[in-house]
Length: 284
Ligand SMILES: C[S@@+](CC[C@H](N)C(=O)[O-])C[C@H]1O[C@@H](n2cnc3c(N)ncnc32)[C@H](O)[C@@H]1O
Picture (cartoon, rainbow, N blue to C red):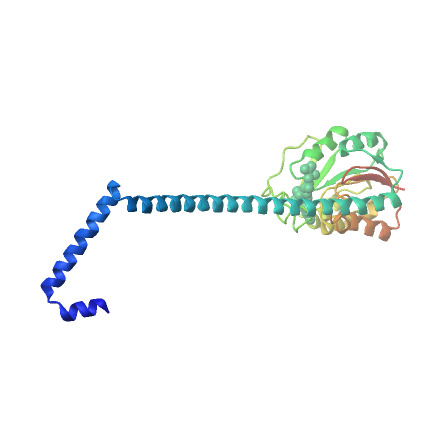
């Protein structure tokens, strides 16, 4: 409105002079402010300093708050994770001990399977096959080979990992891309899926099983093995099942296939040793 009046009533030269005057006055004010000559500007400067400090401290608070929030969130997430895992382990332990109480109270707890194997090494039938299903890098089959150095140990594995998801390992875990591990001289390896290698091995190797090590984790794989070997598993056969109990989901894998086998074959099993996941015993 004011500028419209100026435009209407003052000639151009007056407008220009007024603008120049305003510009000069502004510059002087700024110079005085910078030099600190005008005490009013000092107040303005102090106010702006206080405002800037307040702004920076607010900014710091905000950063600290968001840092705290991130740490708090991480802590909460961790606690939730631990609580879930604890509950998982607690339920697995409880259901495992329900099974132990009912079926194997007299079995002895031995933390390592190799200690249990050593206990029974002299008691396995003098004749019969010693077989392992699930060889992977050969750690445990070499332990079996050292335990019975004068007997042949047959090991079966795809060397391509698990064909399906298992409770703690996804399909494809333990994949060695078909390459076979270095094993003791008394070990013979059979590479391929159990359903393919077992019939071939079976047709060339008659006789019962003396010691069977099931370490292939999955229900389906354990079921295939036990179905093929059913006629060769007799009274006196020792069976080690590496992941039968103790973890969340144990009832759905090796345990399930083994219980089905026992009831279908009409066998009774004497559980003698167990650890956090394995059991070892013999067919009565
Ligand atoms: C837990 S690992 C064996 C660990 C091994 N005993 C050791 O001492 O480290 C399980 C193995 O079972 C094998 N496996 C599982 N199901 C199979 C199947 N249906 N046929 C062949 N191999 C299988 C996998 O390839 C894997 O190497």
